[in-house]
Amino acid sequence: MKNLFIILLLTSSFLKAQEGKQDTIFFKYDKNYVLFYDDYKKWWDLSYKDYENEILKNINLTNTQGYFMLKAVDTLYNLFPKKVFSLKKYVETRKFYYPGKYNKIVDINILKKELFNKYKVFFTTDDNGFIKIRQSPYENYYHSFYPIKYANKKKYPKQIKDTLFIKYDKDIFLKRRNPVSREISYLIKDRMYRSSEYIRFEEKKKYTNISKKTEPINFQDFLVNNFNDKIDDWTLSSYLSNYVIFFVCEKTYIKMQVIDVIDD
Image 1 (spheres, rainbow, N blue to C red):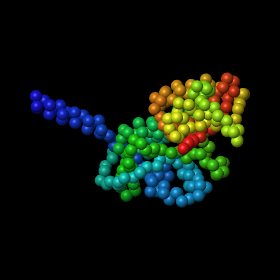
Image 2 (spheres, rainbow, N blue to C red):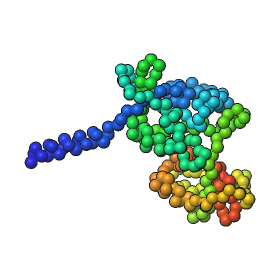
Image 3 (cartoon, rainbow, N blue to C red):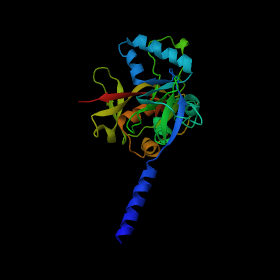
Image 4 (cartoon, one colour):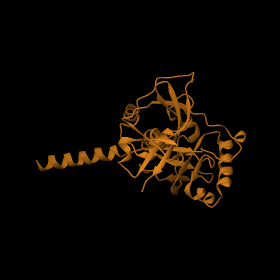
């Protein structure tokens, strides 16, 4: 009986070790598409306009709408990969993008599931080194280049977004009017009391003659279908920022801007 217990214990330990085992994948380091924290620090002291100029250079060089910012933890040598991939070609595909026809921003949740949670990731360097990165489940690896505020829009590619039509439901959204500016905004009722940080939809313009119409989605169903209703405000805000948002109230279409609010 004692021997049987030892065998079962060893088997269980072996299976757990196998479950935690990851394959390794290698990518060629692209300094304009992959920024390490130490490289990114040189931008910290720049004015926002100078920072934007650096961003614009990278947009033109990568021809993408986002970039990776990673933490290098070690450089190894004497590794012999069978294949080295281009990270840009690997992830800049419809499989990794946010849902829609036009979106070209990588969905960080898909990225984690299909890449960083599945593989140990290394980047090759010119001196035959292999940069090992920190892979934490709580880190965000991919960042959008947008929004860009000050630069001449003719000098960089425009971000083309898909549109989300959300059915206005007074049981889900709390309507408010600013007593000074008279601006109208909406809070998400079941989220505003859960955290000090929450999201506000601010009215920008009303339309009654939108020609390209689609059936508006129920916001609660949208949360469940996309996030299983387990999502923090930052992730939701990041997700929604990649879309043009309209609230649909009968025959009126209200264009919204998604704004993060911190209420102390």
